[in-house]
Image (cartoon, rainbow, N blue to C red; front, side, top):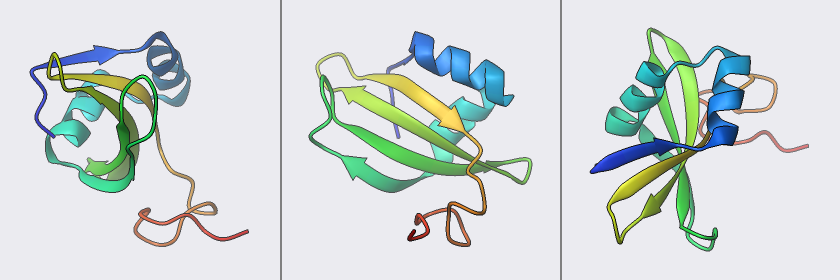
Length: 95
C-alpha cells in the first residue's frame, strides 16, 4: 500500500504497545504486506486488513485510507493467533 502519510490512532498505539508490535514492523507490513480483507463500508474511511511477516513473525495491520489526503491511518496491529486463523493467517477459522 502506498501512503503519502501514515498516522497512528491512539487505539493503535496502545494496542501495539500492549502486543509488542513496533512502528517499524507496521510500516514494513504497509509497504510490502498482502491484503487479506477489504472493508469498503468502514467509516469514516474504507479500510483493509494486511498481513506481513517481519523477522518471521506474522503481523496483521488494519489500515484505513483517506483518499483526499492520501493518508493511511493505522487502526490496530497484532500478531494473529494460530488457533483463530487458518494456516497462512489469511482466513479466519470457522467456529
